[in-house]
Image 1 (tube, rainbow, N blue to C red):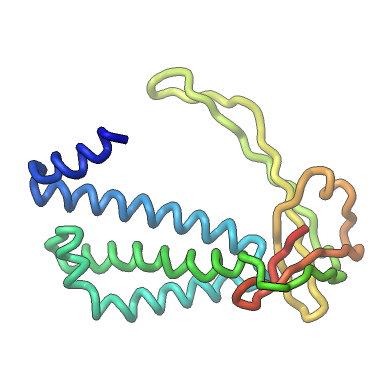
Image 2: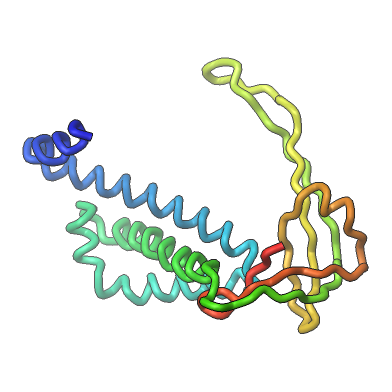
Length: 194
């Protein structure tokens, strides 16, 4: 812990301004990638069409770009305006994509779970080949990974595809009814629990 504080207090005084900006840009890109993945994981269980949070994130990032692009250029040190705009849209879009989906997964105070009957429209079994490294530039096949999905239709016509375990996939039949356990999220959008 002492080395961490030494690095940020003493070394940053010695470190050049461009080096600090490069570190900030790399940290922002890493944070954006984590936010995109986290948003996708939350969106997989949320009963909301995928285009809704994506459109909201794009409009929010594009709308705020005009206001904050100069500060973003100073923060990251990107001289080129088009490159700075693309980097800004990537970063702010990731946060605008992740924030509402992650907040919605938190349980609403006093919200109980409820059950809803759905119809299984389709069962999907995806097989992917796993690889392992055996040399510096060589990979060989190392087995397969199985992922199971169900596409269900709710009473209001909404269809949702979500991943399930192998046991649940085996128990479920196509065109049969299934009971899902749902819970209202903090923003009011239902989230699939089981």
